[in-house]
Image (tube, rainbow, N blue to C red):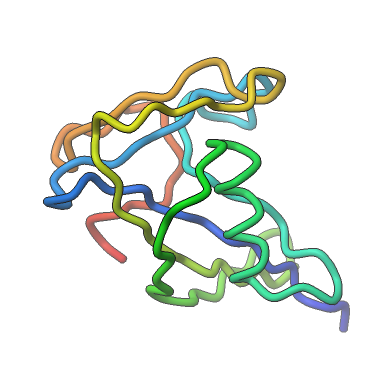
Length: 125
């Protein structure tokens, strides 16, 4: 059996956790809006990956990362582990996102998430 594929997914919440920051990436992968995320590289932990992606994709340096949950998925006969994390930032924080990978970022109310989005749902984690 092949090694499972690990990914880190980070929900970036506002201070009162009523909104989540979503990314509209340059390279689409079946949906328009998604979250800070990346594949965990060999020798790294999911938390290492989550931290790296926050710094690279949003250019944030001062944050408190909290692990939420690990969920096992099976897709096309392969096993995936999604490691979910969260951070909370002020909505007024200037986000200097990575322009080569991200077109724009936007805050969405948790009850009004865009229809064309990643399946991960911060209301259910």
